[in-house]
Structures are given as C-alpha cells and as structure tokens.
Image 1 (cartoon, rainbow, N blue to C red):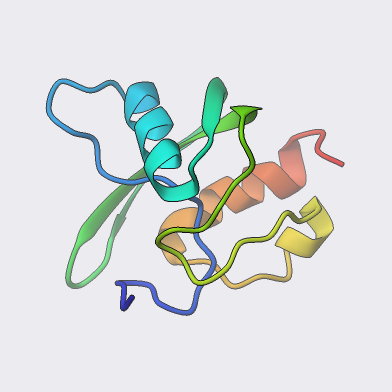
Image 2 (spheres, one colour):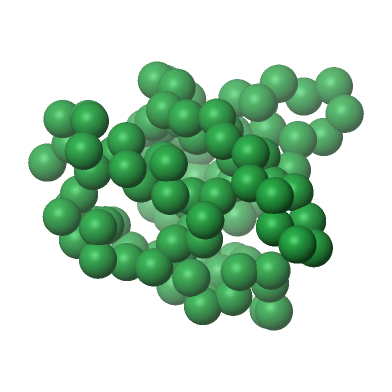
Length: 109
C-alpha cells in the first residue's frame, strides 16, 4: 500500500478517533494493525512535524504485548531491533525524536 512515508521505517499506530484518549487509540490501532493486545506504559515523546503536504503529531509510548504475536495486516514488514540497530534504520522526520530518546536516553538492551 502506498503511504506518505513509503520505504521508511515507522512506529505502529494511527489516528485518534473522536472521544478516544491517546492510549486508547494506540491499543485500538495495534489490535487492528498487528492483531495483538498491548499494555501502554511509559510516555516517550510528543512531537509535531510539519511536512509540506501534511502535519503529523506523533505521541509515542513504551508498550508491552499482553496477548498474541504481531501479525502484519497493513505493512510490508516488521522487525524487532536493538537500540544500536535502530540507529541504522531510515525513519521519517516525525519519528526521529522518538528514535533519539529510545537509542540515547533509555535503558533498552
């Protein structure tokens, strides 16, 4: 499927529906996109990026899978990576502050 940032790695998630909290939207989107249930835990970043054609606000959280295994339904591929591997991947501008926090400031292995 052709997307705004095709070919780049992105964090899963999506739009917040009317009446949804950020966390509720994330749980719903992960269920829809990856067919698993998550527990939303620590806040990571809230960043707004103004692209020429669209403004994207990316709010990210650390999450734990509580049920199921991720299964792709909307994306070309998925990978689990270490923080060092994450530094080598190409992300859209909106994702860069989250990548920076995950790779430089958090205690991820």
